[in-house]
Length: 367
Image (cartoon, rainbow, N blue to C red):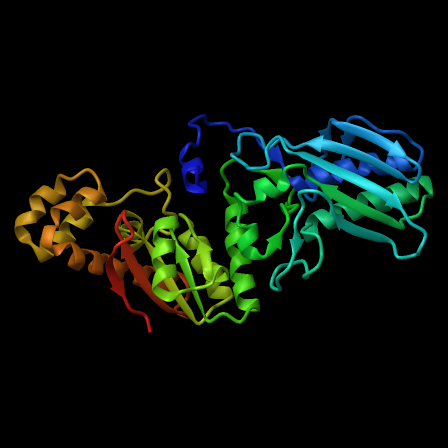
């Protein structure tokens, strides 16, 4: 199942249960392991303080200890969010050292290593993001003050099966190899907020800029992405899995511009963009059929009434017959105008409209 298909399955219930990020789970596991290492035993459940002041408690899944080391784990609960890491075990192992170098983060099984510049963690480091690192460091410093134990520690975070889960994320494209990232800026997972997807888009732009790329492609899905990659022979680092988040992509490009941008997608998705919608998800925006019918009527007045009665953008496109390419070009041109406005006009931007098979219906040049 693709990420877009997963998001289509959003429940209708008004109140969705929130969950906890991998960073929050790792912090709780580290706190429990440090207490055991310091001779206090494993506190279960273990309570932590999140960046916004919440104090959730986590039950421990694993408690292990030996000479100079301790290990604890927490099962991640993503709430009602379709997170690939839901129910994953987040394991923290602390190993004492005596070299005076303080806390050192280590990637255990299933946690990736950064290999490309442009991410908030430098190449060669475990993919444990800055906020989780800060949360972990804070609980260790608090524990050191309380117990008097030093902080020469290797802090290893592991997620069994994380390498397989990471294949379903953008980590391989971002140059994070070997597993997942330990993420979270607030510690809380808000169901269907899609923050992790938008975060991945932004990091993809950062990696492309750091690599000196002058051309990237933002695509609504795998079909349009394959089409653009074939047209331009772009490297994977130049491909942005935009999905439905045109606004999140374009507004970030406004702040962090890249010289040339190809924006590609299916007719219905780009029709929404042409009509000024920056969130292209079916549950949050709909195609204005009357607007599409008017565009078709400008090309073929006889097709206007049937198009006005259509129930989908695909049906309007089918009714266009020999005017399909011209209709797609009109939509692509309008989509380009919306995109340029969202990006602050700072980009050379083209739009490409594709059909369900990946054939190019229209291409509106931008350079």
